[in-house]
Image (tube, rainbow, N blue to C red):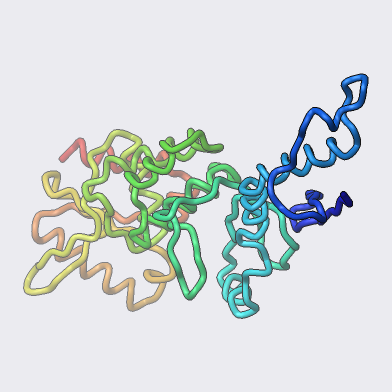
Length: 293
């Protein structure tokens, strides 16, 4: 019997026999007088072992192909590069692709994947869990804040993903999510990074959660209040330079304040620089204002 061998794509060397397939016959007559195996029996035993590992080898082949660069078209790669979006994969094997960063994580379940622009991507919740193991506190807070602004922050879904297995960075992510569990709405309406940064700071201090971007009518005019405490009759306006830095915006803001004060509400304005440079002082001033209501 002449033995043959084939090298498959996994790198394993599989043996076979020229006489046909099927399990090898490892009979006693293939042993030497001292009880050791003959070379032919060793080859047949190895072949039988590899045949039994067919499914495992196939799984390893699939693992190497999962989100391998060969699966991405040039158009899809351009879309990812334009978005500056990293590819999250559970297996780091594969050719290097310029502009794409790899993160080794657990294979996502079917409900943790969605298709965007023809590209399979992990959901926002799953992506936040994956990124928690690779980013620091500041970057992770910004990711959570951005998800909240897009109204894609689902704390309950993130909890379900975290509960499936131990994940690197999970304690950090749970700490960052703590104030988001206490918002008035499950997904508060936030329109800026300033609002998304200030809201959890207020809740972490133990202040009552405000309503966000509430629409109220005064003197026939509809106003949208950034952060609003109805019982304490307090309205906080967050002033970012991109929307409040012009002369027109300055005049409009003064007019809004006058309408609110005339209706019996107190108003205060908070800027991005204040929240960035002195967050504790900003929160303390708001806390004292609420206490004096």
